Length: 355
Image (cartoon, rainbow, N blue to C red; front, side, top):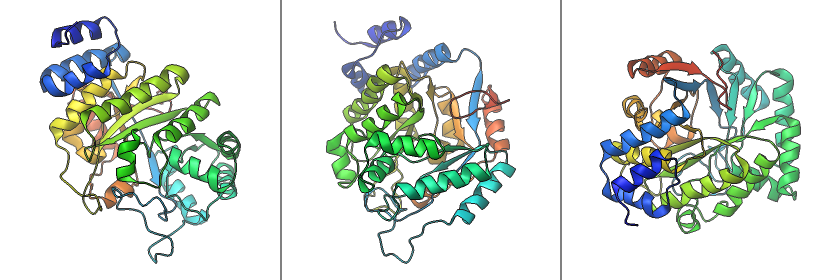
């Protein structure tokens, strides 16, 4: 059967699954407004009530020392750099106290692949956090970090995750995915996890009962087909584990990076957001990225398949190092959501409503 807008629309309305070829058609031969309307239909199927969720958390970058040397990253420092750091427990505790004072209940800790930090460092840190702040959820360590910790600690992936969870790790952020196609990953960073290793970390965690988010960084050296391959790999794993709570597509920020290049347009971002919603028929939540695109584009994204506004993000350093300077308070996020005609609701990482 020939692919057309009509055939795709019929399949979506009937709850069918779109193929890679149909996804390419969406990227290459459909208009933005039609895409947005169709994605909005799917979003309302998942979320019939006019609610838009968000969370209050803090991204604590506990170290910037990293051996991955990703050419898209403006944050990392090489070992031995006088700009390198590892935050002390006291500094991390101070940041968590500030987060709690601002209404936050979760911390998102991500750093570099630092060979001086083995499994015992993280066990000690997580136990310290849980003892001092028992109500705080630790949503931390991307798959590349977990895979690297396992390797340098000479542990299996499962043993590493068991020990981290026992120490206090609650859930895993979807960072380090970039594009889950090895051909592209090698161009971005030859020293990081493969696509298969990223997926293996997530599958292992999900089978242990841990939830995670999933991400895609696009707008650099990949093609539309690479984006779709990435999305389908997320969808395939979700079929088996149902462990992903959300998908977060965000745009590469080229400023101050070795890779460089132009910024992704709002047009391409909204198309990719809408197509993500249409392709991911088994992931319940799609998060808009105000951190990389700004408040207005993110607000528009609520009509292109997005149902979650992400985090107030009290602190964020990695994307900021690459030139993204957007910042928003809880009040601003709530105002923007209301202005779009939705009701803002605070949530946790597993999308349970908190208010």
